[in-house]
Length: 357
Image 1 (tube, helix red, strand yellow):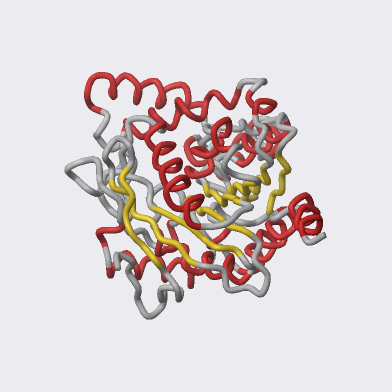
Image 2: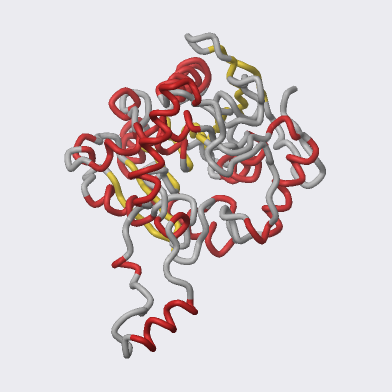
């Protein structure tokens, strides 16, 4: 078995794992579990974010199984236990998100749809949510409903272009007799980082074309561990320490910073969703959940996209950090309440009643 367990993070019972090979000859690690709940609800395919791995989702997998869902999950190429695409395995690299879409389609066809009954759902986080959104035309024939947490639709303004510090605001207020230096309201802040989008994205594109796409983004390195105090993913120290313990026991699962090629590929996938017609094109029923204190992706950009998408419902969880499924219970409970209200959905229940006669 390729799955890694430690005392703090045991493998859920009933696991089966293996590898599938994509049409472009890339080995993708997958795992699946049968439902344990009293009533079978269907199958959930779980899509992780950048630099994550199957073992990080053991708790989420157990939560889904208790709800009556069979669960299938996998590692994207270049991370976790899947085949790496650079000589330095710590580089988070992909040249085009179409390759991630190929990973997803392969797992759905060869594992989820091949071995487990419908209805079929997806639960996707961050980068995984972006990949799914970018392929809904194909996936709406494979999936009934999807739940997306903190989809990567933009980078937040505060993380890259921080507001004036308290000292500078105080000085401006004094010099301008209170006319300047006031803290900006959340609604007045830009939705995304202008610096990254106007400078970083084009630069990453040019350098990738010049053959430098496998270099780390500026400031990036091969480090796979961060301190809890500086992490931007979760405010739950117990869960954070658990994930770090897995990486310490199996560092081969980890991935460092993204490459310029990854950033360029992400930009080419994100930016089309800014067009006014992007939302109406989505036909697959979606529930989109955003984190009120997200410092990894732009929550205002997510809300803006959902406002133009008839097929999507939106829930924002105030105070939560980026990884809603890995957050404190007070935030996770809100996530699961929203999930339970949306999946499997009233239409599915009506169909089941009709089938029973």
